[in-house]
Length: 317
Length: 298
Image (cartoon, rainbow over all chains, first blue to last red; front, side, top):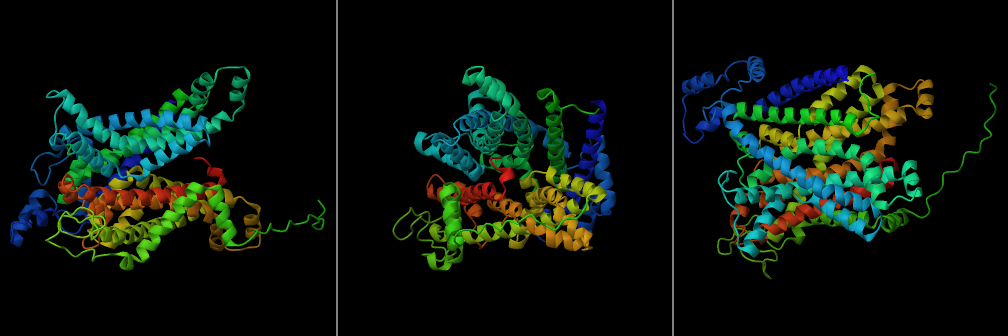
């Protein structure tokens, strides 16, 4: 187990190193740099002035120096300065993290609460009208862009209940009820989409397990259907479901990018879009790296969970 | 072991009864949902091809006298904040969505497919290194990667296609590699090798054609998400640039601003996106069940 964890950590670190190269390179492909963008509204900037600004921001140095400098910053936890705000990048990002984490956690909660039961029902009632209905319901979740669903939810509330959701962020301490509503709606929009994947994998995995001998034995013993399904079958069918939940949690951040924009929530994802539009390299680099780290860690956590959920999975020899 | 002349009767290939028509009819009967998806995709394709015929107005012509108009006889789905006809814009949007979706899916799947083919066929260290590199690409959420890419490349139709295709590469490579791994061990490949046929020829002439099933399944499955990513990028202003009418762009900030006054601004483009993705997912699921029985039900 120990060697396995060490092995996985080393691979994770190497993957992250690779990601840092990809992220760094991608951002340097961009035509134009921050100086052009900052001064595009100011009109003419003399070449010497531009040179001075680039020197101050450190973007006149060769790429490999900039890259090593960035790596050093990540390792030491100093994430550099935002070009636009003239503030340490971490100071801008930090207050945004809880918003995104809360939204992601709520979304995954919705996804599991909707996805697992519908998946179970759909598997148990395979090929009935109910099964078809639930499958279409989940496919619809995959098809609708979550940002559009968010817009429609807002529109519905405004039209039918004449209620406009708060346009600015309400902290928990200020007004709990408003805060809850503000988060539940986007979480529902994002969670519905993820629930579709969870539903599909629950259904297929449960269908597979239900064909196993021990399930037939349980039926033959005369055990009640509910116990056979929830206690015997689902327990073994959960392994792939957990994988999907783990992957989804990381990938939710992608879905949050637009949802946070639609609901005007000051999270990491919404800020990422703004930073990309401004070409604020340090902020984008660090945010995407942050997302990469979250993805890698959640994959690692899922793999570790396997051993707990399924005693047949043993790490190392 | 003495070599005996082959006595085993080679069963004649069961002839498909009827032509393509019968095959389609069988698909419709066995997979009604998939057939419905296929029909919808066909409608979308025809809409894209005949957009110029189907339009009732010039999709980019503005009309200051008729802004935010509700659906009417003149403007079937209403007009937007610049007085442009929404129906005509949606019809032309099908073209953009389909072109970007199909082009990026094909580009990503073909590149990924070739990588998967070579990596799976060569095996060993090459395979290991390739897989780790793909891990890196796949580790980033599709949308985040596409977002950074399209921002880096700048707003242009072909850049959007590239930005969406890159995240598809690792996914395609995985699928093709895994099917190559099993095909590689088949006897006919061994036979080809013993005849002294070059590796490259074996890979491309003998193995590649047998991965066509998973490849088609992969493409239909990716098409939906490519359309969705295009819509999202365009919504954020990082996708298809003006003047192309794109469904995602139609939903962008300006639509949200006027949503209360003119809900049709938000409703119709979203319905178009959802239907397109829904159709390609339905078709993809059915094709997967039909062409790749191993994956059935996943």
